[in-house]
Length: 92
Image 1: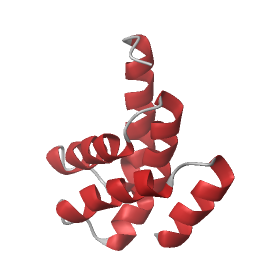
Image 2 (image 1 turned 135 degrees about the vertical axis):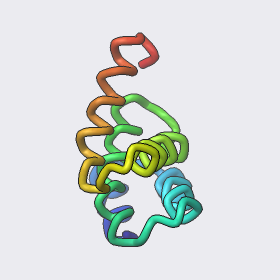
Image 3 (image 1 turned 90 degrees about the horizontal axis):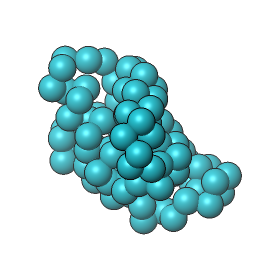
Image 4 (image 1 turned 120 degrees about the vertical axis):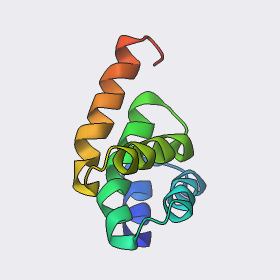
């Protein structure tokens, strides 16, 4: 996970503390490292795209996956849907 955060930070200039707050949300929900790794790049990209709080978006993605008994590999689909929804609502 630290490699993903470091690479993403270097590539896109996102603040590391922002990414780490999202990791805290994963850990608080009991998400395993491998599962968190499946979601991390997607939630970071969503945070960048909508200029949103990564911590809140990571929490929302985790809650969606767990609440609807989805797979962590569905993170890309979920974050894409969230992004489209936020744009349609004019919140971005």
